[in-house]
Length: 263
Image (cartoon, rainbow, N blue to C red; front, side, top):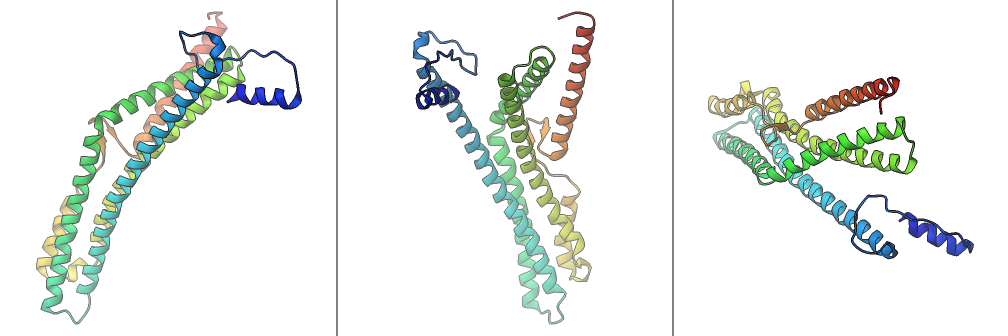
C-alpha cells in the first residue's frame, strides 16, 4: 500500500517528482514492469487471502478446543454437584441412584472429550506438521536476516518487515500452544476436583466410580502432533530457548567473521 499512498500524497500536494517503486517481497513476474499496480494488487491479494485463511483455520481450531474444554468443565461441575448431594443428611435411595447416574455421565463425558480432542488433532495432523515446519523455517530465516541487516546493512523497511513476520509467527505459535495448554488444564481440573471433594463420605459403589477417574488421572492427556510436538506452554518455552541459543550463536559467529575480516 506504500506506493499508492505516495501517489495520493503527490496528487494532494501537486508535486511533480518521479519515484521508483518496488515491491516489498522479491518476486519474479514475466510481464512488463509498467503493470506495477497490477503486480502490487496481486501481491496484496495473495497476502490478504493467506492471512484470512490462517486466521480462519486458527479461529476454527479455537472454537473446537473451547467446545472440548466446555465438556471437561461440565464433567467437573457434575462431580461437585453429585458429591455435594452425597454430603446431605437426607440421602435416600432415589438420590443415590441420581448420583450414580451423574457419575456415569461424568465418566462418559470425559471419555468423549478426550476422543473428540484426539480426533480433532488426527484430522489436521498433516496440516499442522506442514504449518510447524513452515513456521520454524520462517522464524529461523527471518531472525538470521534481522541480524544480518543490523550488523551489515541497516535497511529500516526490510528490518521492520522481517521483524513483523517473526513476531507474527511467534504469536501464532504461542496461541496454538496456549490452546493445547487449555486442554491439559481442563483435563487436570477434573481429577483435581475428584481429589478435593469429600468422596470418602460417599457410599462404596460411588467411590468405585470416582476411583476410575482417579486412576485415569495418573495418565497425562495432551494433544500431540505427529508424535513429536506436544501442544503446551512448556513446548513453546523449549522452542523459544532454542531460538535464543540460535540467535546467540549467530551473533557470536557474525562477530567472529567481522573481527577476522570474513564476509
